[in-house]
Amino acid sequence: MAGKTTKTAAASLEDALWASANQLRSSMDAAEYKHVVLGLIFLKYVSDVFEKQRLKLDALSRDDSSDFYMPTDAARQSLLEDRDEYTGDGVFWVPEGHRWDDLRKAAKQAEIGRRIDDAMEAIEKENPTLKGVLPKNYSRRELTPATLGGLIDLFSNENLAAEEHESLDVLGRVFEYMLSKFANAEGKLGGEFFTPRSVVKLMVDMLEPFRGRVYDPACGSGGMFVQADRFVKAHNGSRNDISVFGQEQNPTTWRLAKMNLALRGIEANLGPQWGDSFTNDQHPDLRADFVIANPPFNIKGWGADQLAGDARWKYGVPPTNNANFAWVQHMLHHLSPTGTMATVLANGSLSSQSGGEGEIRAELVRKDRVECIVSLPGQLFFTTQIPVCLWFLTNDKSAKTVATERPQRSRAGEVLFIDARMLGTMVSRTNKEFTEADMARIADTFHAWRGEPGEQLYEDVPGFCASVTLEQIAEYGYALTPGRYVGSEGALVDDEPLDEKIARLTAEVRAGFEQRAELQHRVVSALSALEADNE
Image (cartoon, rainbow, N blue to C red; front, side, top):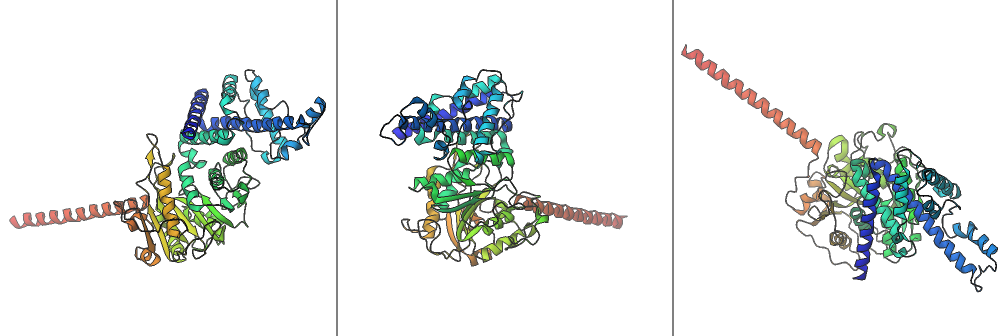
């Protein structure tokens, strides 16, 4: 009961902070205000961690049995301002005059915006891994001292004290919560940097990245990596068990990811700069044990004209007007020989025949790369009502072990289909989330199908899951819509991509009009003939 109460209190704190911060936003656009708020949370975090290290050093310097014992105040002060005593323990160095307490004291002053900019600049200068990452435009006219001072007072809330809530990682939770709220407020654009937490957790629970290299070529704000790190720690592992690699095309989102991961203490290689994964691959030689991603859906103009004959297109050349299968093949290219990948795609990828997509999908099936397909319910994402699904692929189903702790049986020649469209619970008027029970049901089904120790024996469940041979899939023209195989009601509703359905219906309607015109012509001709006979 105490644990539940603590979690509820933390959630209430997040709600209260969001409500207050949103009130201070006034008329500022959410996309701009996001960086203002998240930058200040990050500044509060690095200052809190710095002060915690400072208190630890101070206590050691006064303990005559400690290696750090300093007999005089001057010696103690010298130790407390020794940069190496902080950075050596992975703590960001925050220069004197630019710490949170300094800003809090100046929160009501007219030049507070400049003071924050100076603090961000100084912290970047002292910590090379943060170079070019932190926002430094707090002195804008639209950011009034009342707004900035109000935010500083808000985040000086005693309930955000790092020492008291260290086990909950409250500032990290607040940062993630704010990300989700801003994604919702921004609508479609917000989805470019944020994937709903329950979707990320489901993918991670299915992949089980206990150890190895984890890669996300469209990493957004880094949520996939945060959840993978949580998974490792929840299973008594160390964050050193995984190595994180990512890439992000949007420069502001790349900076958000750097802040998010730094705030979590996760060392990640996101490349020396932002860049497009197709035309400016920051990790060309990487072969990851796990690839996990939510790339943008159905994007056009993704650089196909620059990539003719690219080595990544082993299963077919992706169409120029849709990058879905370019993403899939890019991820497979970066997958180790025994690795596993998971990606979110629009449902059209399951059955589309446009631009050669059908042949690429067929080749992926024939080569036995597809491991599992999960159809998801609507309204999980803030930004789109397009039906979406999860694809799980691997380079070698016959491998007895992957980079997890659990061996698995070979499922060569089979694909698992899971129809999860009826799962999930509405958490707002417009959005749905998976419950813990939903995620456990899907993930446990996947692990049972793999034959992993400790799992119950796998069985097909009509309307929910089915293990299907490649020969059966070939009979259905290599369409991968789960409802077609598990036998759920309305299986054909999502079976046809919207653009193809519109084209088919348009053709049918036009054909109907032509038939009606022909029939009308024949009737008129017959009537005219009757009139001629009666004259």
